[in-house]
Image 1: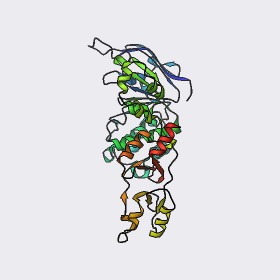
Image 2: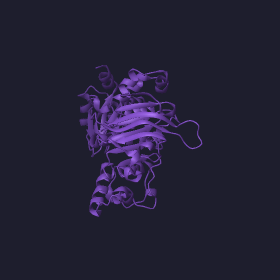
Image 3: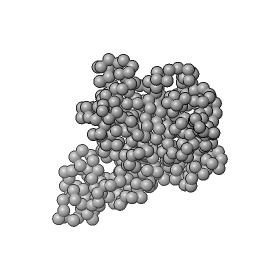
Image 4: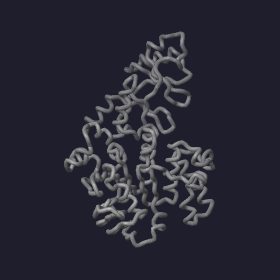
Length: 371
């Protein structure tokens, strides 16, 4: 991450008409180039208002906002918004336009030629994990919530903006899809290195997603701004301690990812497989269970030696189904929560395509956090 400041707010305030108190009061804030800065705080603290001030969806009552050294309070707001990607919880796709047309919105406004737009649409749909040939001519009503949110991110990235503003982008999605989208976002950011201001009310999401976190109290007053590690280990005041809540040690597991651990060595058997070879694989290991994979390396079932000795059932129906899985971008907190639900006390690690790449055990987590 560069130490160059890309976004700077100087004494920015916003008071809505008819209100006695400002929603944002004399806020000073800097966002470094290439970082994810998460604004987090209780409902009504002004975090979403702050985000909208940056791209001038609402105008500041006073103060200055700089983007790459330029005072954006003095430029055309429509031109400014073409340079800034914006993703919201409600997604906001145009229902009467196809997926391709939605993503092409800003490039079309910028006058890109049609071939360049088509290539960019196909590229971005692939990047966010959606098959362009299958989906680009569909309409938003034909997408799941998770797919629509991915398209929203693709649209925000379409003109390759330097800045991405994200306002509770995953808040309205079911927990499993939300976790997958968070992981996808982390993967994308490792490649794209965008400057991102991310708003959430969820401190666990803030810790997982942010390079730095700004914890806001009323009127967007910054109670503490620092790295997740420093905030967890040294909260600045009682407000921050209260907002973090109990279980700081458990929250610290959010700072480490599954990819950081040493994957456990678990015997695997792959369809089609002979029973004697499966028994031999188990006997040659220190594990009580082997993992059955299908022909494409997709985890299917946990099988132990006792199950293999039940000769009247095919191997594909033996043992226990794999129901707990994590990805490398998941946090150790996610992995621990999953392992508590696992019938074998382990969590299978899969890639974005669902293929097996390793196992996470309690020992591997303890080894990392105590090392």
